Amino acid sequence: MSETKEDLAALNFEDALKRLEDIVRNLESGDVPLDQSIALYSEGEKLRSLCQQRLEAAQAKIEKITLDRDGKSQATVPFDAD
Image 1: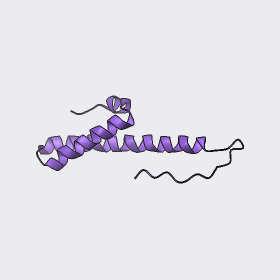
Image 2: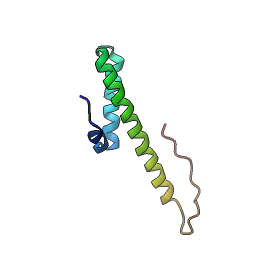
Image 3: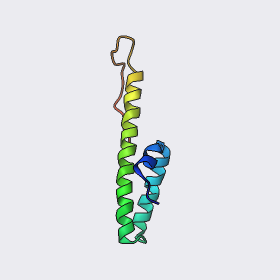
C-alpha cells in the first residue's frame, strides 16, 4: 500500500512509526518482489523523515515550555530519541 504525500502528512507520529515498522518487516522478510521493495523503501524513507520532523518539533515544544518567564533556559537536558 503506497501512500501519497498528503496521506503521509495526515498520519500522526504513532501511525507513521507503525507503518514504518510494517515496511521494515516486509523488506526484511525477503518475500517482496524487487519493484515493490523499491516502492516500500521509498515510502519508508518518507516516513522516517516525517517521524524525525515530528520528534524535532516535539523537542522544540519541550524546550520552549522549559523556559522561565525571562526567556532563560531552566536546567534542560538534551532530547534523546533513542
